[in-house]
Length: 223
Image 1: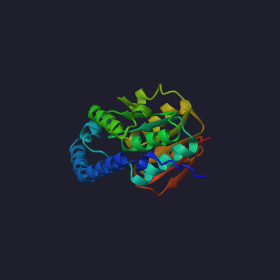
Image 2: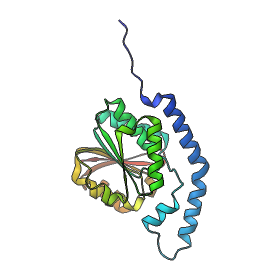
Image 3: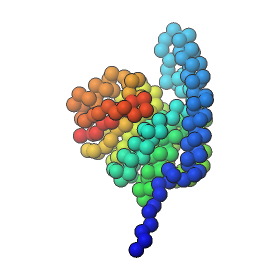
Image 4: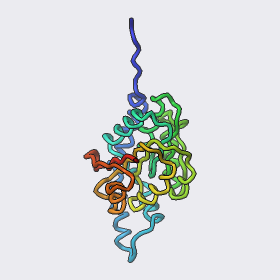
């Protein structure tokens, strides 16, 4: 008897082409945008605000590494996640991985993205529509410390991939909606503030592990 084997939507030619375009654009443009942002920050007498950094990096895609994206897909599938939250949507690369996992897992779930820069949020919506995954996402515009307060729990997975100084404040906003077993993926390990790492590594209600994927991630399990 023949059996049918379903394919992940990640193998869809439309999505593979979209990823290729997004990563190619990031490789071409992000270094220049970040160099200008660093120069602008260095020219100021005080540390930049979140709003200033958001404006300076408005044309930088800053996508998760492909290996991190595939890990996110696997985690959502393994958890059979129904509610996923992302801090730092940018152009929507990681949202495509997360929403693809929701779709392949039966389609009963939603990924909430958060993005402060309006043009980035709109670009992410366009990319999700191109991927055919818009119905599985909600992109919330504005300061994540406010927009994510009302996301309904229980949360199954949280991705932190925005402004690093906000990782801990955003985590604290989301904690009331977490359940025992919620996974938290924090990207860019070398850039994570000590306060965040102290919280997830020193018995603050988490079991945590550093993983050498992309620029490094911290994977934490809510107790």
